[in-house]
Length: 344
Image (cartoon, rainbow, N blue to C red; front, side, top):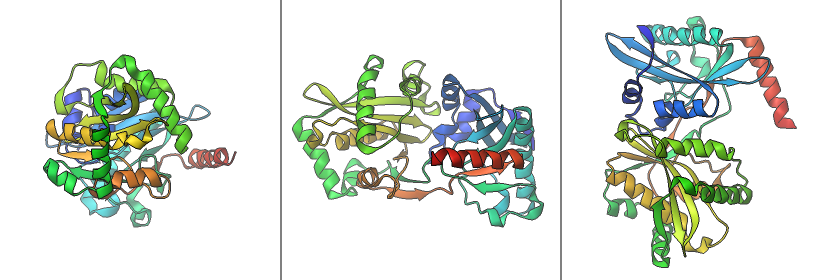
């Protein structure tokens, strides 16, 4: 097995794009976005017999005293199992790949790798001689989501929804709510809605520049089809006013509902339901195989979870977020600092 740096967007996107999970976070374009917001990005791949068998987009995240860590969102994308779950050959292959990550981490002063495997990973199952030190961490990306199969007809999709969801979609249509794609100059309308949503529902948002740069993935580049990540902003309009908005990502086989926002007025016209349904229908028309609602949690987001479940679909669980530790002393200092920061 040989480790290479990926320098061509198509090579990476072809490898990571064919899955119903939120793999857009491993796409070339998402890495470009992370660079725009100030992070250093590395793209590694494992090659065997002329074929790529694994890839990892690594985002370097600084914290204190010049130290950093690598974050690999919804990855690595790996076509052999993780060492804790497979035989000796898989352990060997995995160790070779992660040893290369460690070499890069040493050069970049990164003390651990934070990653989100697609396969179940249990710390106690790791053999003592694997050389890996892995701990479960707090989840970064949602560990549970809902996936819609867009091969169903529109009638089938509607039939599988909760009756109240179907009712609210039709109510919004009857009230005259219209759905359209937003223009770049309309970003402030989205930002105002997001501010209302965060204040009302207790969510935390990034700075406005973060979302503006994210949306540039849709507005400021040539369209590359399904093999390139495309971010779109959609508005629900009522009485000539923008009252709800969705940000959706389109990549590979999957369209993903990334962010939503709604104002405090006209909530009785149920615009978010129609907005979601029109985004789903657009993804289906464009030939996407799946629609990912990108995160549910009954305890943290009960209202959002009920809303998403109303559209039907298959619930999907991920193992969560793990840390592969390269420098134990600094790692546990980092954990202590993070714990203290949450207390104050």
